[in-house]
Image 1 (cartoon, rainbow, N blue to C red):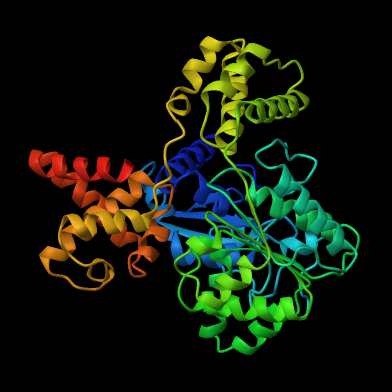
Image 2: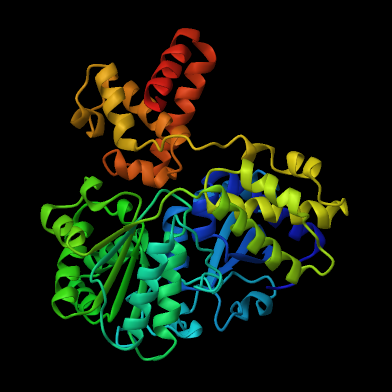
Length: 478
């Protein structure tokens, strides 16, 4: 990243915090963690990302949100310019234009993440078709995965799959791993990709999030390259699909056809979702049967012993990074007993303790943990609420049909319940605004944001309305 002045660095850090608060931790980690700011010049914030896919996706879906984060912090930024880093560096013209109008990103294809990290993606796709896998996280390997009774079967299955794939064969095909958020599904899929690709750099191993798969599909349709897209899918040796529950529309059918072709050709398929195949409403019977007919492996909630092992492992990793750092065993016990939600919160808890120690030089004690982790400590093992439940409850309460709730009807009798359902989906689930919009008739995330703000405004000025929304919230949570 280009060295920024102190003022620009502060602006960027504050803008990132606003963006994180706006989109949530999961979305921020998926799309913005690798974004860097190169400079602010002549009212333009120059940002860079490592892949063309990220550039296209962020520009299409989050440009307004990023600009909003900047303008809330400074009047120096009136527009954004996003470019793709080449070999880890931004295009040289940012520094060399001497204030002239920013050039468009270079048209030639950049080396994709898979080739840089050693997991081969199909090199026969024409440049510009954006057909590549989602970025892999080098930290998510089998070595860094902490095992216990909740996940030992899933880990054993993942290792077996990776070993077989490395030898050019398939095991337990297909494999479907399911759990609630933050329990290790993505970690295992990344680990399989790394382990299966380690022995043969030319094997076509592709890890795709559901959002990335839908982007591929929509791009292929728009560019009239659907045949090339299908050929690319059928050329994959090991396909790993994450967040299956987010697939929508015709992309589900396309994935089902691809899985059938890959399984017929004895190619390995591993899928992860937040529920068993039988509970995913968007699947057709054929795809549901395909997935259910393989090895379906759950990951259970983390028990205290496993939570303790996870925080111990993360503390050891932090100590290796920060010499002299020490997190006492009673503090680790305290975190394991009181942070009950999922693995990402445990990682976050250790990160917060380390940050508090490094920034204040205060020793890590239970008192420090209580201050640093107060919001995480309030998290308990509550029932996971689904958007489908919210829609059903709201529709029944207001005596409208669920199809009307998801339709384009604009009558007041439908619009207000729809807005309330969107609001409850935002506060009761971990889904992002774009994800909620897709579940409400493929609406844009700005429509969801408007609904949330409208309901909040009405609740602030109308006690009766606020009580009605609170009643619905309690009904859904119970």
